[in-house]
Length: 378
Image (cartoon, rainbow, N blue to C red; front, top):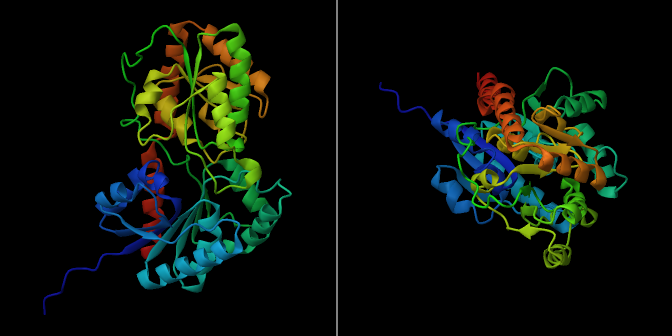
């Protein structure tokens, strides 16, 4: 009797949004497809659906479960039924909401799961009710998870210390990694040689340090009015209201002439190439993809001396570290960067790319996932 073709193994990926699938996890998703897996993304759909599906991935809209109890219940219901119908061989989760609800459901359905803790933000320090609930639930959510990847050692050690995970299943990977061939230097990309450009790229929420960026810009422009401060990134309303900015905030900054807001971009390489320095004064990250991509393109960076940011920079060598939530210190580092010679900044950029290739190659992350998936399936 002739055996039929071997049935494809199914992988379900639970994401908060398709933008991450289309950008930072594109390399991993395409490698899974190349390895012969049938991959379905369970997420809140948006304008990137057609782009993602063209690559060979399937997409199921399970909605977005924010703090509204009805929406959370609907999100859990949709996620349960999607996983039950799919019956994947392995499930991957990214970020807090998929990690918590996804792991409870996959445990009930006996689906082996690999979770990536992309960052904890204020999870362990906030007194907000939502974060207190999340801390309580997290304690039980990862008990049966097969593998938990962390993007930095601080988060890994914290979860082990809190007994959210055991050392045996915890492993650190270098963030989401970066495709250093895709994010490579662009010669003569700068179109405006007269003006120095600082560029902020990130979701427009307080935790990314957007207020400190604006305040620092005000300080610096008093001395150097020719400096341009560009901002790229989407409004983000899935966070707590206390962590979001309003459209009036943004409009006031634009009218004031402090920043030039360029919206959300699918491909940020052109904008990184045109900038002189990338700035991200975040309060905490898993590992910042923006900083990895910028350094890979030989741009010096300024970021905060905190988890998920400090690992991407060798201070005074590939960029500068500043204090968290300190606009004056950020302004000082911006001024210091501006006053460097062009050759010194280029040297910083070259050393930054060398660091990225050595420590943050995306292939390291992809290999870790393939190894974990193979171990589960074998």
